[in-house]
Length: 243
Ligand SMILES: [Zn+2]
View 1 (cartoon, helix red, strand yellow):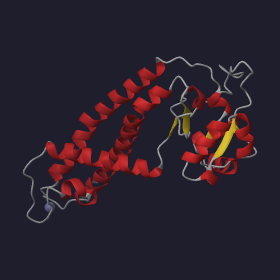
View 2: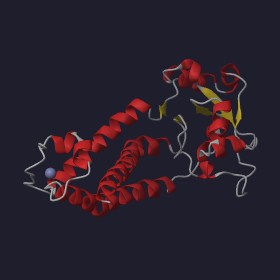
View 3: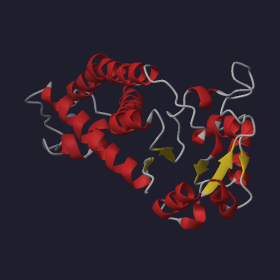
View 4: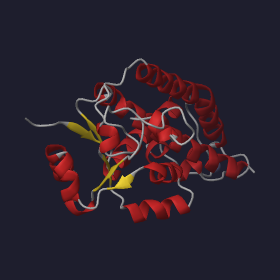
């Protein structure tokens, strides 16, 4: 029997998605505006999609491309922001309609590309996820020890990680024999547990009640997050130039 699960986005995948989000956003911005030109600036229609730095740069006074920048702000604030909110809400509503099967795998086998020391370091630097994670999870002493608990799953995670040495396994000591959380409803239970599986953790067990949810919404969620990141970059750049 092979256990299937989904690895979360690798950096390369996210870069690809970010690139897709960029083309989509700039295409949308350009649809709303036609026939702009400037006697002093040489910008082709292709540049307006493929060279963000060129069109986001501060404009000289009277530049024809100020209209493009104003349109970009308006498209992002009116259209894109609303669209992302709707998409994220739909993903959240779907997630909340699902009931946990209490398989316990998310508590007994969390994996990360970071060692416990690295996570502690990140926590010290103020990383919220790392802070919450290290507040409850404990590391397995080795991959071998994790394999004793979940032989096939651990082997699969290591095999698919792309970096067998760089996978670390963790477990939560607060799960009971009945697979119930002994700190449920207390302030000790961090928000990464209640927002599971909407976390940066590396895999989701295929028998998890949320596996289909993750499968169906993961791409869309990444795209939404990439678009948010991109929009804040674009708005920041343009507004900086308008000052
Ligand atoms: Zn100009």
